[in-house]
Length: 469
Image (cartoon, rainbow, N blue to C red; front, top):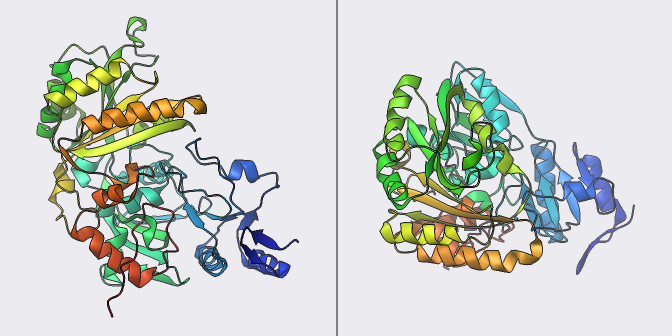
């Protein structure tokens, strides 16, 4: 085997790589192999990068060995779970990709209502298994997202108003830190680290197992109500959704109606506010909770039905395909009339016909956790808005960036921060917006203790604080 080399860095002994591979329970994918081009892909097609090595870890020992190799070689290290990072952090050029996708162990204790889960699981895989016991952990809105990155950033999904963020159900983690140590972080063991990983992203190590609390979630009422995209409908969304019982979580999409079996042909292509939702309670009560939305305007189409909780992921399966896209997001105090007008004017002439604006109304259980209890500090956020501009031709990216950023800037008036999982590579100021004030300073100090050389930097990076001597 040839020596493993990287521009400016070399592991000169060819046995080094052989010894590393021999100790792995998983496998290595190198450039030139038949698997390489598929193995290096991430969900966002705009990140076409060529790592020097992809390590498919099988267990925590493989993770520790790979972290040590990255530290000793000086190579950039990307940690990948579901590969959904909007910033493309699951890959790099010329470095090491630590792929956790094969680590899918899941142990559920239905009596204690707890689960130990490895980071290669997707939200859909975990949720389907838990649903067999009538239980769930609140994750995100799409099934193919890896539970690792989703949880470490906070985890805002279909049960956020009823059961809070994913991190609000996190009981402990097993984690490999920058020095290669394997440790447990919980309220009783390394509590500073446990505080940081609940919202602080992948800055502090590689989590190899999560312990979650499970909640009773059986059959839900779920689906979508497609309303006309009028000024009155859009300006009424926030107050109506906020006033709903906490059993109702909505994620709305301002978008062109796609062809679906339940959509009349004459409605396809019309701009609509698609109010998607999960009601985690009795179906009859859920129908009552939906009536204020239906009274806003006669729906253009709707599909509202009882279903097993994992079924909600199927409604967004089409959106999970690999694609080019530009994203900008904000937490907002409200969506006022000026914002409504700006949104509707922009969506009348989008740069891409598949552009959509996602609006999540928050509150409920998420808001009852103190802001300083975890590294996710935006507990009082009312609205999360995400502009999603997907496109097919990569040469047209500048036009889509310009359109997306122009609308995003017009919505700054009521900005209250940003969710780290919905950031692209937008600079240090935006990272600080995700971790405002003392939250960032506390995270930087914990970073200094556990990763002083900033090995874990391919993320929404928190730089280690400088020790005062």
